[in-house]
Image (tube, rainbow, N blue to C red; front, side, top):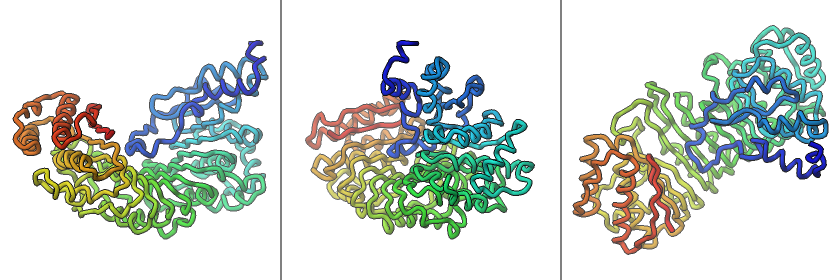
Length: 513
C-alpha cells in the first residue's frame, strides 16, 4: 500500500468519491419522475451489523436494493493512519438510522459528532426512518446529558426514563450537529413534543447554524404512533425554523393540521412541493394554504394512493389546480396522479375520483412538463371523429410552452387524445412538445375490454380492417401495435417516419423529433 499512500491527496479523494455511494449517485429523487416518492422502499434500508463495530461509524446504503458501506472504502480506512484520515469523511456523507439497526447506534453517533466537529462538517445526507432507540450502554446517557447542557438544550428532569422523551432528545442532539446536511428524510413519532426544548439551543453560538445548509426535506408520517391528542406539527416547526434555505419539501402521509398553526412564512423559498397520501388525513384547505405559502413554486407533485380496501375521497383535482393558478406564476412541472386501490380489478376508467371539472391549463404560461389524468382536462370526454374541432378543443387545454406530457387512465380517453395530439402537432400546434408518455391499465388486456378497444380502434382509424391485434395477450406487443396504429394516423397526416416507438410493458412513450 506504500504506492497508494504516495499518491497526491487530490487523487485519493477522487478515488474515495468513486467508492462512496453518496458521491456516486444523487440521494434525492428526480422531480421529473412522478412516481419516485411512492416507490421508495423505506423498510428496505437497514444497517449491516458486520460494519457496525468498525470505527468510525460507516455509511449505510440507501434506497431499494442498495447494500451497506462499500468494502473497498472500509479497507482503505483499515490500511493505514494516513488513508484512514483521507477516507474517514466519506463514511459520514450519508447517515441512516432506523428501527432496523442496533439500539445504541444513534446515541454513539451523536457522541461521535459532538466530540469530532470536523466529521460533523462532512454529513450531507441524513435519513431518520422510524427510529426506535432500544438499549443504551452505561455511561452514554450522562455524556448525552452533558452535551445537551453545553448546547443549552432544555430536557425534562426524568427524560432518560421515558422512551419518548429519550428518543426525542437524542434526535434533537443529532439535528444540532448537522451544519452542512443538504438533504434529510425524517420520520418521527407524533407524540415527540420537543419544540420548547429546541428554542434555546438554536440561539447557542455553537449550534445556531445547524440545518442552515438544508435544502431538501422529506417528511414521513409514523403510522404506528397515536394519531389523536398530540400536536403533530411541533417537531416539524423546529426544523423549518432552522432550515432557512429549504427549497424542496416532500410530505408523505403527512400534511400539517391544523394548518393555521403551521409556520407558513418558513415556506416562502420553497420551489418544489411534493405531497403523497393514501389516508383521509389531508384536507383541501391545508393543501391550498401550503401552495399559497410557496409563492415561488416551480414544481408541484401530488399523488393519491388508496391504502388497501380503505377508500377515502381524494382531494378534487380542480381545487388543487385552482390554487396553483391563483397563487403561482412560474410553475414549470405539474403532476396530479391518483392511483386506484390495490387489488381493484374493475375497469380502468372507473376510479374512485370525485366529480371532475373541465380544467384549462393555458394559464400556466411557463409549464413544461405535465402528468395528469386526462379526465380532469377540458373536453376530455369528446368521442367525435378526428377533425379540426376535436383537435383544437384538446390542444386548447395545454399551454404552448408544454414539452413533456404524461397521460394516465382512463385508457379510452387517452387513446383518443394521443391520436389527436399527433394530428395537432403535425399541423404546427403545440410547437414545443417533444415527448408524450401513455400509461395503459392492466385491464386493457382483459375481456370484454378487448372487444371494446377493437371497436374503438376501428372508429379512430376510420374503417381500417387490421384490428386483430387486440386479441394479443402480450403487453409489449399490444403496446407496440397500439402505437403502430397511432403511427398510421401520424403518417396519414403528412409526417412519416418521425415517431420512433420504444414502449415498456405498461407504458408507451412517443418521442417527437
